[in-house]
Length: 446
Image 1 (spheres, rainbow, N blue to C red):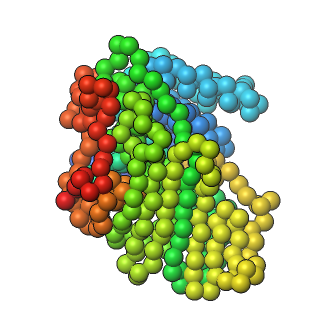
Image 2: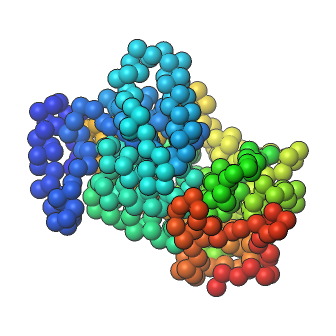
Image 3: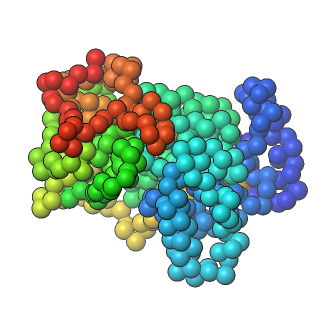
């Protein structure tokens, strides 16, 4: 299914005519009867946006700016007001980009294609060639699975799950996506950033990697207050960053970026972890159940160690960066240079060549789809780097040494029993409005 030259219309029609034959060896009969995935067989690439918050809005705009013939045809979210605000923001962003005259050609989402509710994603996915999955990450496993089942190309934000059972679901769907040759890009954008790509090409300059450090330390994020009349489900979804079934804690929702960079350069994932963490300043009722700091020692099979820290505390040192140490030198990712152990400069990336990786991940994905190429299979790495962060959370919550295989297979599932507005999540407030917090030495997983 490779084609390095852009298709003309006749070639596109011929491609889709033979697509079923080309993939017949890897698709079962039921899948063949429903094989509607886009493979460069149409002039217009139709997009559905699933999850209309700030990241979804940004991703949709980036997809529409990808220079391909794309059209946003459907939007889905649990909340109608999120769809409305995203629609307004998307059209506004495109107008500011100076392409207001073409907005009607790029955005065709009438009210009947703005789907609201927990099952809205299924309806929106059905209308598209490519789906953008940007809801809170707790929903990612079921949304990704559905998109793969419906044979769609996919962009999905990180993290891709919030518990080990979700990771297993994503890994299973990732294998199916590969067999169907569905392009999947995960929003771990460092993989699409020029400076990181150039550092990666030259990582042998530091010899064998022996250790690494990673940081995501800053002031933290927004808080949404509980409002009168909300069910517990609605409140937690509106304030989703502070509940693990939705967010995974900030070690997973944010710090995954830095952990993933180390995994990428190592070409491996940690086999065990131990660490410490807690709630030093964020202790209010609206702070849910997550910690405000984590420090984790990740161990790899070759004996190398990643020391990882993330913190959400105001008026403290801010640092988001990675340092990779080898037998011959060090890679300073933020500074985009490589030095020997005496400080001598071995390589410096030219910052004039830096790109916007958030845009590039969409540019490259949609370019491949427009050409009928199968090029991207990010889901497995996305799942394993997400699991690395979950491994760290399990280590800080329990205070124990947590092993990868045991953690992945411990059966931990923190999702609610059903997705309805009246379903009670597993984590509930006590009489004082406070949620149960993990206690190192008491919390256990296996």
